[in-house]
Length: 216
Image 1 (tube, one colour):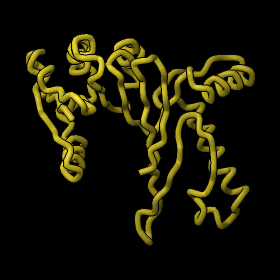
Image 2 (cartoon, rainbow, N blue to C red; image 1 turned 30 degrees about the vertical axis):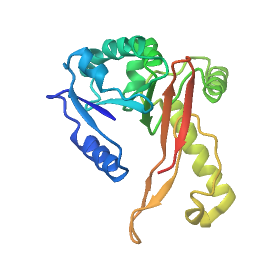
Image 3 (cartoon, helix red, strand yellow; image 1 turned 120 degrees about the vertical axis):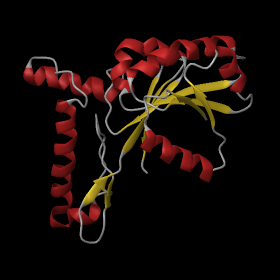
Image 4 (tube, rainbow, N blue to C red; image 1 turned 180 degrees about the vertical axis):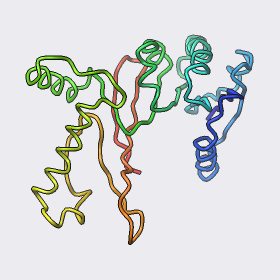
């Protein structure tokens, strides 16, 4: 893991958690400033390992600075050496301006919501939406139409299948979400539930989009 420190753009809470996980799993971490010389960053890459770059900020400024550098690394390194960029939910917003770059540097990011018009479930939903309402969906993050559909479908199906016992079967319900998924955990014996569902989105360097479930 190669952490690119944007200095004034700190995302300490996420990075602190990441550092703890890396330490627990004996995964080496190297920290470099975003203005580090290109050759020094290139020399950090370890052959035979998956080299994952992550910026300590989800803001667009540091990303705009690093994307050309990561593209140059991708074009310069031995093709057999694996490099990836890992990012944040905001990356789906930035994809409108940086989609080609994201593909080239093999980008992953996590998010609790995601819709892409190249995924089958999104294509089917968009078609049904236009047929029903005779207009395009409003662009927003998250997208309100599929968000509302997924939420309504999950809870209405749960009540229909399990009735008053739905609370005891929150994670037994099978759905095929368009935008947002559900995996609930009880906070404590007296409190409510937290939705722990997370997706990993992969914009691969062979120009494919994957949405993978991550249930923890």
